[in-house]
Length: 171
Image 1: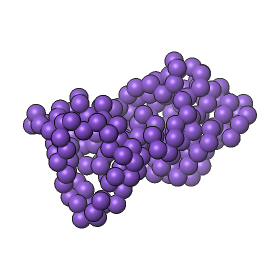
Image 2 (image 1 turned 90 degrees about the vertical axis):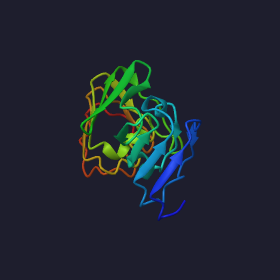
Image 3 (image 1 turned 90 degrees about the horizontal axis):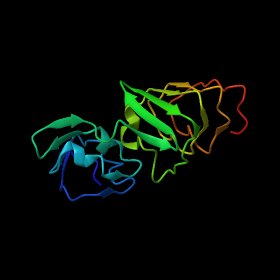
Image 4 (image 1 turned 180 degrees about the horizontal axis):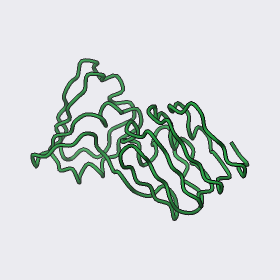
């Protein structure tokens, strides 16, 4: 893709956007999508498409939003997440799903908006690549119930310091 690309038109039939499709599109500011905001939640957007995710999306119904993608969902059995005002909160019980750098976590399209992560008591592990490339992430709160930080869970993120809980067994 081109570094000078400023706007793109997407049909409402689009279902997948491959990883790194818009990685070098530093000028991208607008996405004109023929569908509705609700339809964007079913588009699978691969990793390294932050420019696309952060662009203003204009929809066929006349509305627009800053950024695209879900702001809540699940990230493991009995585990859910919400993103509000830059804070990603994860609650529930058990182990988080392990993700890959290709598929990304469920909040992949919103990761540039994440400045803080709060993982609640009951969570036993942070999934692989969960916060990979969350470059604006500065603050992380981990629970005492955490037993494992899986592979690359905070790789290439913006955190400068993290306090690990006493019960942690695996990094």
